[in-house]
Amino acid sequence: MASTKVKIPTIDFCNLELKPNTPQWESIKVQVFEALKEFGCFEAIYDKVPNEIREGMFDTLKEVFDFPLSKLIEYREKPFHIYDGQITSIPLYGNVSSADLVLPNSVETFANTFWSDGNPNFRNVAKSYFKQLMELNEMVTKMVLESLGLKTYIDEILNSNFFFSRFTNYKVIKGEEKYKSELPPHTDSSFLTIIKQIQNGLQVLYKNGEWIEVNNTSSHSYLVLSADTFMAWTNDSLTSAEHRVVPTGDKDRLSIQLFSLPKLDYTVKAPKELVDEDHPLLFKPFNLLEYHKYTMSGDKYGVNLKDYCRL
Ligand SMILES: O=C(O)CCC(=O)C(=O)O
Ligand SMILES: [Fe+2]
Image (cartoon, rainbow, N blue to C red; front, top):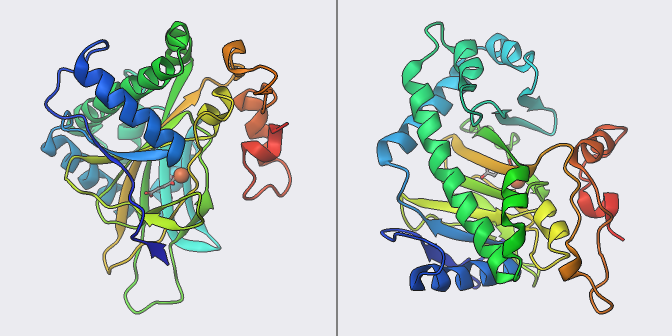
């Protein structure tokens, strides 16, 4: 059972002209760093995504999972477009992911696969949604690096970012208790992951062993998670939040994720400033391409970066 005793911090990013070196920035920066160290996550209240854009994204997500399987398979056949569904252990879980929703000018491949007119409205909605969340990702990244005294690395990290988006659907079939669409506990391989859920279900593991429910306190709530790459790059200064999804209720649960990953050939290595005799290097330098090749080879279900390159 998830606990209600410990709460994930909520950090308000609204109504502020958030710029480095302002008092608001400094105050939020402290909260962000503390939360990512302690919990590996926080709930951001972030009102830069207009309601109609967020709703447009979820309407599209529903539409995509109502398409026949043949459409989803056609989508999967395009390079770098993933459809993960019908997994034997979680048959009601499905996700559609790609890098192209967030690359400038390339949401077209996604839209052209699903809609014969290329759905121009959705293309605008997706660009607007991800642009705002990429700004949130950038602010949080800067705040972490400033907190670590590593301002000089901000450009390097932001330039190494490669974004991946995912639409996830946890189907519910009423009365079919034996089918569960839970997502098992895992950590993400990204620097940061930004998750929007409309129904609850997401839970994060706290260091005392309790699963904490992620609740939306506002329609502008997003969960920001720090993940494996940021943990390795910061030599363990941040936690990589272990999380899982246990949907409740009798409606399909929908969520959208944005992952900021390191570019495939970027070598992730903790900077020298974070390594000394008292803080030895904890992860061998790695790049995502080699790591993914490793996770895809043989039976590696459930492995994470720690298994791959923790020293
Ligand atoms: O559906 C969610 O809320 C989270 C999904 C997730 O953890 C993932 O795709 O890595
Ligand atoms: Fe995840």
